[in-house]
Length: 327
Image (tube, rainbow, N blue to C red; front, side, top):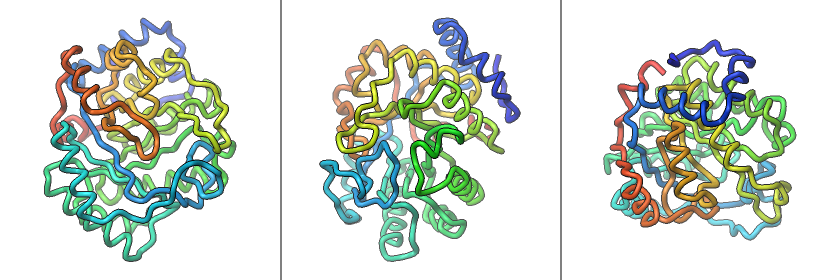
Protein backbone atom coordinates (compact mmCIF):
# COMPACT_ATOMS: atom_id res chain seq x y z
CA UNK A 1 0.00 0.00 0.00
CA UNK A 2 1.29 3.46 -0.89
CA UNK A 3 2.94 5.61 1.75
CA UNK A 4 3.74 9.32 1.69
CA UNK A 5 7.12 9.70 0.02
CA UNK A 6 9.16 12.59 -1.34
CA UNK A 7 11.89 10.61 -3.08
CA UNK A 8 10.08 9.12 -6.05
CA UNK A 9 12.17 8.47 -9.15
CA UNK A 10 10.91 9.00 -12.66
CA UNK A 11 11.18 5.26 -13.30
CA UNK A 12 9.10 4.40 -10.25
CA UNK A 13 6.35 6.77 -11.34
CA UNK A 14 6.54 5.46 -14.90
CA UNK A 15 6.11 1.87 -13.68
CA UNK A 16 2.89 2.89 -11.94
CA UNK A 17 1.67 5.04 -14.82
CA UNK A 18 2.15 2.24 -17.37
CA UNK A 19 0.22 -0.45 -15.49
CA UNK A 20 -2.86 -1.94 -17.18
CA UNK A 21 -5.58 0.64 -16.70
CA UNK A 22 -8.06 -1.41 -14.67
CA UNK A 23 -5.31 -2.73 -12.40
CA UNK A 24 -4.06 0.83 -11.95
CA UNK A 25 -7.52 2.12 -11.05
CA UNK A 26 -8.11 -0.71 -8.56
CA UNK A 27 -4.77 -0.05 -6.89
CA UNK A 28 -5.48 3.67 -6.73
CA UNK A 29 -8.92 2.94 -5.27
CA UNK A 30 -7.29 0.96 -2.47
CA UNK A 31 -4.93 3.82 -1.69
CA UNK A 32 -7.84 6.24 -1.75
CA UNK A 33 -9.85 4.12 0.71
CA UNK A 34 -6.89 4.04 3.11
CA UNK A 35 -6.44 7.81 3.32
CA UNK A 36 -9.88 9.23 2.47
CA UNK A 37 -13.57 8.49 2.88
CA UNK A 38 -14.72 6.79 -0.35
CA UNK A 39 -17.73 8.52 -1.80
CA UNK A 40 -16.95 11.84 -0.14
CA UNK A 41 -16.23 14.52 -2.74
CA UNK A 42 -15.55 18.19 -2.16
CA UNK A 43 -17.51 20.69 -4.22
CA UNK A 44 -15.55 23.81 -5.11
CA UNK A 45 -16.68 26.93 -6.92
CA UNK A 46 -14.39 29.11 -9.04
CA UNK A 47 -15.12 32.75 -9.83
CA UNK A 48 -13.17 35.01 -12.18
CA UNK A 49 -12.92 38.22 -10.17
CA UNK A 50 -10.81 39.98 -12.83
CA UNK A 51 -11.06 38.73 -16.40
CA UNK A 52 -8.80 39.08 -19.44
CA UNK A 53 -6.01 41.45 -20.36
CA UNK A 54 -3.22 39.29 -18.93
CA UNK A 55 0.31 40.01 -20.20
CA UNK A 56 1.35 36.33 -20.09
CA UNK A 57 1.52 34.13 -23.18
CA UNK A 58 0.18 30.87 -21.72
CA UNK A 59 -0.77 29.21 -24.99
CA UNK A 60 -3.87 27.51 -23.59
CA UNK A 61 -5.40 30.61 -22.00
CA UNK A 62 -8.08 32.79 -23.63
CA UNK A 63 -7.36 35.56 -21.11
CA UNK A 64 -3.97 36.44 -22.59
CA UNK A 65 -4.13 39.96 -24.06
CA UNK A 66 -2.05 38.98 -27.10
CA UNK A 67 -4.56 36.35 -28.31
CA UNK A 68 -7.70 37.21 -30.24
CA UNK A 69 -10.48 35.43 -28.35
CA UNK A 70 -14.05 36.27 -27.41
CA UNK A 71 -13.09 37.11 -23.84
CA UNK A 72 -14.00 40.64 -22.82
CA UNK A 73 -11.69 42.39 -20.38
CA UNK A 74 -13.42 43.05 -17.06
CA UNK A 75 -12.01 45.05 -14.17
CA UNK A 76 -11.78 43.67 -10.66
CA UNK A 77 -15.25 42.87 -9.32
CA UNK A 78 -16.74 44.74 -6.41
CA UNK A 79 -16.39 43.04 -3.05
CA UNK A 80 -20.12 42.81 -2.41
CA UNK A 81 -20.64 41.07 -5.77
CA UNK A 82 -17.98 38.51 -4.89
CA UNK A 83 -19.57 37.87 -1.49
CA UNK A 84 -22.96 37.30 -3.11
CA UNK A 85 -21.38 34.77 -5.49
CA UNK A 86 -19.75 33.00 -2.56
CA UNK A 87 -23.06 32.82 -0.69
CA UNK A 88 -24.79 31.32 -3.73
CA UNK A 89 -21.96 28.81 -4.13
CA UNK A 90 -22.32 27.74 -0.50
CA UNK A 91 -26.07 27.35 -0.90
CA UNK A 92 -25.35 25.15 -3.91
CA UNK A 93 -23.20 22.84 -1.80
CA UNK A 94 -19.71 24.26 -2.31
CA UNK A 95 -17.36 24.19 0.67
CA UNK A 96 -14.42 25.83 -1.14
CA UNK A 97 -14.62 29.16 -2.95
CA UNK A 98 -11.82 30.04 -5.36
CA UNK A 99 -11.19 33.51 -6.74
CA UNK A 100 -9.11 33.93 -9.89
CA UNK A 101 -7.63 37.13 -11.30
CA UNK A 102 -5.96 37.32 -14.72
CA UNK A 103 -2.73 38.86 -13.48
CA UNK A 104 0.84 37.89 -14.28
CA UNK A 105 1.76 38.71 -10.71
CA UNK A 106 0.27 40.40 -7.69
CA UNK A 107 1.12 44.07 -7.27
CA UNK A 108 0.96 45.93 -3.98
CA UNK A 109 -1.84 48.32 -4.86
CA UNK A 110 -5.51 49.06 -4.22
CA UNK A 111 -6.68 46.05 -6.21
CA UNK A 112 -4.65 43.70 -4.01
CA UNK A 113 -6.04 45.45 -0.93
CA UNK A 114 -9.53 44.78 -2.25
CA UNK A 115 -8.70 41.10 -2.79
CA UNK A 116 -7.51 40.91 0.81
CA UNK A 117 -10.87 42.31 1.89
CA UNK A 118 -12.64 39.70 -0.26
CA UNK A 119 -10.64 36.94 1.42
CA UNK A 120 -11.56 38.23 4.87
CA UNK A 121 -15.25 38.45 4.03
CA UNK A 122 -15.58 35.05 2.34
CA UNK A 123 -13.68 33.43 5.22
CA UNK A 124 -16.48 34.63 7.51
CA UNK A 125 -18.84 32.34 5.56
CA UNK A 126 -16.97 29.30 6.95
CA UNK A 127 -15.73 28.30 3.49
CA UNK A 128 -12.25 27.27 2.43
CA UNK A 129 -11.06 30.34 0.54
CA UNK A 130 -8.62 29.86 -2.35
CA UNK A 131 -7.05 32.42 -4.67
CA UNK A 132 -5.17 32.18 -7.95
CA UNK A 133 -3.65 35.56 -8.75
CA UNK A 134 -0.36 34.79 -10.47
CA UNK A 135 3.09 35.07 -8.94
CA UNK A 136 3.47 36.10 -5.30
CA UNK A 137 6.31 37.54 -3.26
CA UNK A 138 6.97 36.39 0.30
CA UNK A 139 5.34 39.49 1.79
CA UNK A 140 2.26 39.19 -0.44
CA UNK A 141 1.80 35.55 0.52
CA UNK A 142 2.00 36.55 4.16
CA UNK A 143 -0.61 39.28 3.67
CA UNK A 144 -2.96 36.70 2.16
CA UNK A 145 -2.30 34.36 5.08
CA UNK A 146 -2.99 37.14 7.56
CA UNK A 147 -6.29 37.83 5.78
CA UNK A 148 -7.29 34.21 6.37
CA UNK A 149 -6.58 32.64 2.97
CA UNK A 150 -6.84 28.85 3.22
CA UNK A 151 -5.31 27.80 -0.11
CA UNK A 152 -3.45 29.25 -3.08
CA UNK A 153 -3.57 27.78 -6.57
CA UNK A 154 -0.55 28.05 -8.82
CA UNK A 155 -0.30 25.19 -11.31
CA UNK A 156 3.03 24.06 -12.72
CA UNK A 157 1.04 23.09 -15.85
CA UNK A 158 3.42 20.50 -17.33
CA UNK A 159 6.94 19.10 -17.04
CA UNK A 160 9.94 21.40 -16.80
CA UNK A 161 11.25 20.14 -20.15
CA UNK A 162 7.97 20.93 -21.97
CA UNK A 163 7.23 24.18 -20.17
CA UNK A 164 8.90 26.54 -22.66
CA UNK A 165 6.74 25.06 -25.43
CA UNK A 166 3.69 26.35 -23.59
CA UNK A 167 4.79 29.55 -21.81
CA UNK A 168 7.72 31.91 -22.38
CA UNK A 169 6.82 34.92 -20.23
CA UNK A 170 7.80 33.25 -16.97
CA UNK A 171 10.02 30.35 -16.03
CA UNK A 172 9.39 27.05 -14.31
CA UNK A 173 11.46 28.30 -11.39
CA UNK A 174 9.13 31.31 -11.14
CA UNK A 175 6.28 28.86 -10.59
CA UNK A 176 8.17 26.89 -7.97
CA UNK A 177 9.26 30.05 -6.17
CA UNK A 178 5.65 31.15 -5.76
CA UNK A 179 4.78 27.71 -4.35
CA UNK A 180 7.65 28.10 -1.90
CA UNK A 181 6.40 31.52 -0.80
CA UNK A 182 2.89 30.16 -0.32
CA UNK A 183 4.15 27.23 1.75
CA UNK A 184 6.37 29.45 3.89
CA UNK A 185 3.38 31.66 4.69
CA UNK A 186 1.47 28.66 6.03
CA UNK A 187 -1.11 28.61 3.23
CA UNK A 188 -2.07 25.22 1.79
CA UNK A 189 -0.79 24.62 -1.73
CA UNK A 190 -3.03 23.83 -4.70
CA UNK A 191 -0.90 22.88 -7.70
CA UNK A 192 -1.36 20.49 -10.57
CA UNK A 193 -1.33 20.70 -14.32
CA UNK A 194 -3.02 20.38 -17.68
CA UNK A 195 -2.96 17.43 -20.06
CA UNK A 196 -3.51 17.98 -23.75
CA UNK A 197 -0.85 20.67 -24.27
CA UNK A 198 1.00 18.58 -26.84
CA UNK A 199 3.05 16.88 -24.16
CA UNK A 200 4.29 13.29 -24.11
CA UNK A 201 3.68 10.63 -21.47
CA UNK A 202 7.18 11.40 -20.22
CA UNK A 203 6.11 15.01 -19.68
CA UNK A 204 3.07 13.92 -17.69
CA UNK A 205 5.25 11.67 -15.57
CA UNK A 206 7.75 14.52 -15.19
CA UNK A 207 5.06 16.87 -13.96
CA UNK A 208 4.01 14.39 -11.28
CA UNK A 209 7.69 13.85 -10.41
CA UNK A 210 8.07 17.58 -9.69
CA UNK A 211 4.98 17.66 -7.47
CA UNK A 212 5.73 14.55 -5.44
CA UNK A 213 9.29 15.62 -4.72
CA UNK A 214 8.39 19.00 -3.27
CA UNK A 215 9.30 19.24 0.44
CA UNK A 216 5.60 18.71 1.14
CA UNK A 217 3.03 17.41 -1.31
CA UNK A 218 0.45 19.95 -2.49
CA UNK A 219 -2.66 19.55 -0.37
CA UNK A 220 -4.64 19.87 -3.58
CA UNK A 221 -3.71 18.58 -7.05
CA UNK A 222 -5.97 19.69 -9.93
CA UNK A 223 -5.81 17.50 -13.02
CA UNK A 224 -7.09 19.64 -15.88
CA UNK A 225 -7.87 18.58 -19.44
CA UNK A 226 -7.22 21.23 -22.05
CA UNK A 227 -10.35 22.97 -23.28
CA UNK A 228 -9.22 24.30 -26.68
CA UNK A 229 -10.36 27.88 -27.22
CA UNK A 230 -10.56 29.57 -30.60
CA UNK A 231 -7.92 32.26 -30.93
CA UNK A 232 -5.33 30.57 -28.72
CA UNK A 233 -2.27 28.75 -30.12
CA UNK A 234 -3.64 25.40 -28.90
CA UNK A 235 -7.08 25.86 -30.40
CA UNK A 236 -6.63 22.92 -32.78
CA UNK A 237 -5.30 20.44 -30.23
CA UNK A 238 -7.22 17.19 -30.11
CA UNK A 239 -9.34 16.29 -27.12
CA UNK A 240 -7.54 14.09 -24.59
CA UNK A 241 -9.04 10.56 -24.55
CA UNK A 242 -10.76 9.71 -21.29
CA UNK A 243 -8.50 6.77 -20.51
CA UNK A 244 -5.50 9.13 -20.40
CA UNK A 245 -7.24 11.33 -17.84
CA UNK A 246 -8.14 8.31 -15.70
CA UNK A 247 -4.53 7.14 -15.84
CA UNK A 248 -3.27 10.51 -14.63
CA UNK A 249 -5.76 10.67 -11.77
CA UNK A 250 -4.95 7.14 -10.60
CA UNK A 251 -1.20 7.72 -10.75
CA UNK A 252 -1.51 11.02 -8.88
CA UNK A 253 -3.59 9.31 -6.20
CA UNK A 254 -0.98 6.58 -5.65
CA UNK A 255 2.07 8.85 -5.47
CA UNK A 256 0.31 11.60 -3.46
CA UNK A 257 -2.00 9.50 -1.29
CA UNK A 258 -3.12 12.20 1.16
CA UNK A 259 -3.66 15.01 -1.34
CA UNK A 260 -7.04 15.98 -2.73
CA UNK A 261 -7.03 15.09 -6.43
CA UNK A 262 -9.28 17.52 -8.24
CA UNK A 263 -11.24 16.62 -11.36
CA UNK A 264 -11.03 20.07 -12.93
CA UNK A 265 -11.23 21.66 -16.41
CA UNK A 266 -12.66 19.45 -19.13
CA UNK A 267 -15.26 17.76 -16.92
CA UNK A 268 -18.11 19.05 -19.09
CA UNK A 269 -17.07 16.57 -21.78
CA UNK A 270 -17.24 13.57 -19.42
CA UNK A 271 -20.23 11.28 -19.03
CA UNK A 272 -21.47 10.36 -15.58
CA UNK A 273 -19.95 6.89 -15.99
CA UNK A 274 -16.57 8.40 -16.86
CA UNK A 275 -16.71 10.69 -13.86
CA UNK A 276 -17.63 7.72 -11.66
CA UNK A 277 -14.51 5.90 -12.86
CA UNK A 278 -12.45 8.98 -11.96
CA UNK A 279 -13.88 8.90 -8.43
CA UNK A 280 -12.99 5.21 -8.18
CA UNK A 281 -9.47 6.12 -9.33
CA UNK A 282 -9.05 8.59 -6.48
CA UNK A 283 -10.53 11.92 -7.56
CA UNK A 284 -12.26 13.44 -4.56
CA UNK A 285 -12.99 17.01 -5.57
CA UNK A 286 -14.82 18.73 -8.41
CA UNK A 287 -15.46 22.29 -9.47
CA UNK A 288 -19.17 23.00 -9.78
CA UNK A 289 -21.04 25.91 -11.30
CA UNK A 290 -21.61 26.96 -14.89
CA UNK A 291 -18.08 28.29 -15.47
CA UNK A 292 -14.45 27.61 -14.63
CA UNK A 293 -13.07 31.14 -14.96
CA UNK A 294 -14.07 31.53 -18.61
CA UNK A 295 -14.81 27.99 -19.85
CA UNK A 296 -18.06 26.05 -19.55
CA UNK A 297 -18.64 23.63 -16.68
CA UNK A 298 -21.54 21.41 -15.52
CA UNK A 299 -24.20 23.24 -13.53
CA UNK A 300 -24.83 22.68 -9.83
CA UNK A 301 -28.15 20.92 -10.43
CA UNK A 302 -26.58 18.41 -12.79
CA UNK A 303 -23.89 17.65 -10.25
CA UNK A 304 -26.41 17.17 -7.46
CA UNK A 305 -28.23 14.60 -9.60
CA UNK A 306 -24.92 12.82 -10.16
CA UNK A 307 -24.15 12.85 -6.44
CA UNK A 308 -27.56 11.30 -5.72
CA UNK A 309 -27.24 8.59 -8.36
CA UNK A 310 -23.67 7.65 -7.42
CA UNK A 311 -24.27 7.94 -3.68
CA UNK A 312 -21.66 10.66 -3.22
CA UNK A 313 -21.53 12.94 -0.19
CA UNK A 314 -20.30 16.57 -0.33
CA UNK A 315 -17.22 17.04 1.82
CA UNK A 316 -17.43 19.67 4.53
CA UNK A 317 -15.04 22.63 4.63
CA UNK A 318 -11.72 22.02 6.41
CA UNK A 319 -12.40 18.25 6.60
CA UNK A 320 -8.92 17.40 5.31
CA UNK A 321 -6.89 19.32 7.88
CA UNK A 322 -5.90 16.29 9.93
CA UNK A 323 -5.44 14.00 6.93
CA UNK A 324 -3.04 16.42 5.26
CA UNK A 325 -0.87 17.40 8.19
CA UNK A 326 1.90 15.00 7.15
CA UNK A 327 1.38 15.01 3.38
